[in-house]
Length: 292
Image (cartoon, rainbow, N blue to C red; front, side):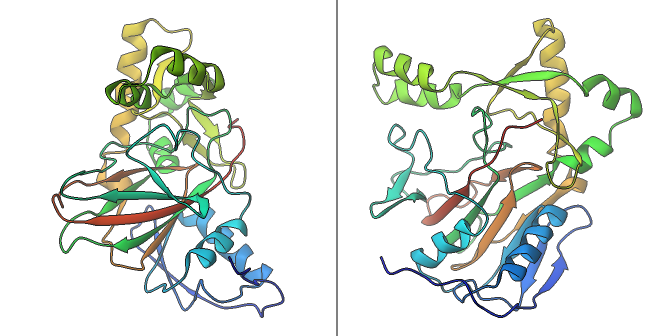
C-alpha cells in the first residue's frame, strides 16, 4: 500500500446541515481523499460529538484513504470475531476493513437496534461506514440519539437507572457459531478470551459529559442485582426508546456515501427491505475506552 500523507495541509472549511432536530448532520465541502489539517480533524471530531452521526456524499476515495481518515481519530480495531463469523469478511490486505455484504444468495442486515461490540471491556469509539454497492431501493440505516433518549425520561426513571450496572455478552454470535458447526471446545476458548463485560446502564460521554442510555437488545443480558422479571421489564422499556422517531435519523445510501457515527452515544439499525438486491459496505472502526 502507498502511504497517504495527511499532514501539513491547510485547514479546510466545511458545511454542516442538521438532518433532524435530534441527531445527524450532512457534511458538505470536504474531500476525505485529500490531506486534512489537524484543525479540520478536530472540527470533524467536535461535529461528531455534537451531531452523533455525520454523513458524507460523493467520496470517491480508495481503501487507503478510508483507513488513513479513520486513523486520524485513533487506533483502528479488527473485529474480534471476524475470523469466526461467516457473515463478515475483510480486505485481505487490510484486516481493519470489515466487509459487510448482502447478496441474493447470502442476505444480511443488522436489523436490530444496537451499539457495536458493547460486550467488550472497551467498546468502539465509532465507525466509518462506506457504501460501495447500494441497492436501487431500500437498505437504509437508522441511528438513534441515546443521550436525547435519556433526557426524555422522567426524573424518577433517570434517578432509578443512574448507577445501575448491566452485563453485556456476545451470545448472538455464539449462537451463530454453533449453527456454523463450531465445537463447544472452540467456543469455550472464545468465552475465556471475551468474558461478559459490565457497563453502566447510563454511561457518561467522555467528551461531552452527556448521560447516555447504554443498553441494547443485541448484547445486554441483564441488570446486576435485579430479579430476572424486574431486569427484563426495565430493559424492555429502555430498548424501546431507540425506536422512537423523535430520536432518530435515517440515511439513504448511495455508492461512495459515508456515515461516521459515535458509538458511545448512539444505536443503529440496518433495514432489510432491499433483499435480494446486492449491497456492499466497508467499515473501519476506531477503538474506544471503558465506559464510566
